[in-house]
Image 1: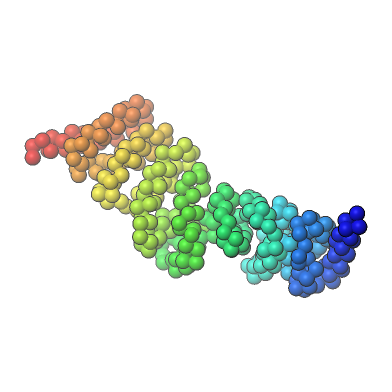
Image 2: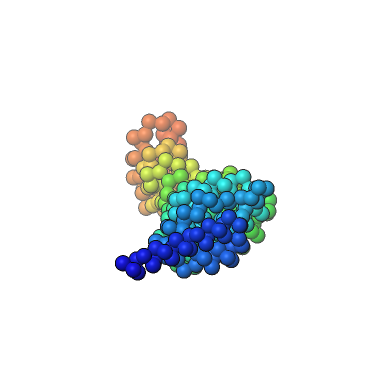
Length: 331
C-alpha cells in the first residue's frame, strides 16, 4: 500500500513540476529531465498537462517544448489529430521546427505508439519525421497511410526537365530499403499508384524511367509488376498500362512476358484488353508457331466481349496472326 501511495505521490509531484515548466515555456531540455524515465502508465498521468499547453506563441511560432510534450505524453491518436490541426498552415521553417521537437518526444515512446501514429491517416505529411524512428528500431510499416506518406515524400520529377532528378537519386540512396520493399507495395494496393504523385506535381512515368536508368533489374521488375497488377481486382488500373507503355518495352521484352500479356485478355476492364491487344499486335511478326497458337487460344475470352472497339482490335490481331503463320509455313 505504501509503495502504491509513493508511486502516486511521485507522479503527482512530477505533474506539478511539469505544469510549472510548461506555464513558463521552459526549454525542451528542462522538460526532458522531468519526463524522462517515466513509463507509459505514468506518462498517461503526466499527459494532463497537455490541457494547459499552448503549442504556438502569440506570434504563431511553434513552442519547441510544447511540441516535445505532445510527442512524449500524448496518445498516438491525439498527437496525429493535434498536429494536423496545428501544422497545416505553418511555413516550412516553423513546420520543421515543430516536427523536430515533436519527434524528440516520440522517440521516447514504445514501438506500439510509433506504429499507431504512423498508421493514422492524418499523419501522411509527417512520414519523413517518423520514418527514421521506424528504421532505427527495425520496424516496417506498409499500411495505406504509411505508403501514401512514402509516395508523397518522393522528390518531384517531371518528363519536361531534369529538375529534381538528383534529389530523387539521393532520396533513395539514403533509404535503399524503400526500393527493396516499400516501392513495390504500391503495386499491391488499389489506388495507391497514380500517374502523378507529390500532390499532383510529379510524373510517375518520369520517376520510374529515371530509376530504371540507375538501378539494375528495376526495369524488368516494374514491367512484371505492372502486368501482375492488371490481373488483380483493382478499380484503378490505368496507371499500370500507362506506365508499361511509358517504358517502351521492346518486342523481345514483350515476348518474354507473353503469358502475362495473354492473361490480361481476361481482365474485366476493356481498357486493359485494348492495351494487351495493341501490345500483342506488335509482337506477332516475331512469334514462333507455338506462340502464335497460344495467342489464338487466349483470344477466345475476348470474342465474348460486347465492346465493338475491343472486338475490332481483336480481329486485327487475328488477321496479323493468320498472315504471319502463313509466312511461317512458306519459309
